[in-house]
Image 1 (cartoon, one colour):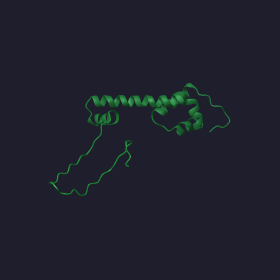
Image 2 (cartoon, helix red, strand yellow):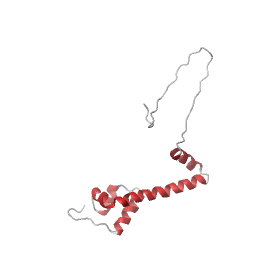
Image 3 (spheres, helix red, strand yellow):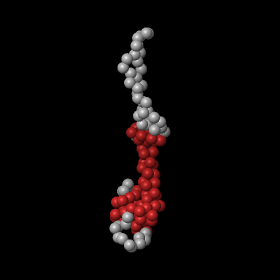
Image 4 (cartoon, one colour):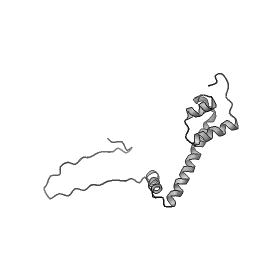
Length: 117
């Protein structure tokens, strides 16, 4: 990292940051590519870091949506689970005769955030 030299962003560095952010490159690695610190990266390129991530997510979301609409079952299931709150559940029903004791039932309590309690 160049010490004591003020970093001045230009169009080329802004495009590079946005492009690297869009494909999920870690901020620390982007900073290293520009020979600046992580703090300097965040200070000068906040907009590009956010826009890169948003643009990539938009493209992936659009592709997923199109795949789901076209009948891709995996895409449909993923969309419904992540966007519509659908989930898979297993229900086991036990039937015994009148007056008989039920043995061996295990219960797991799950909190609203999905963690087992």
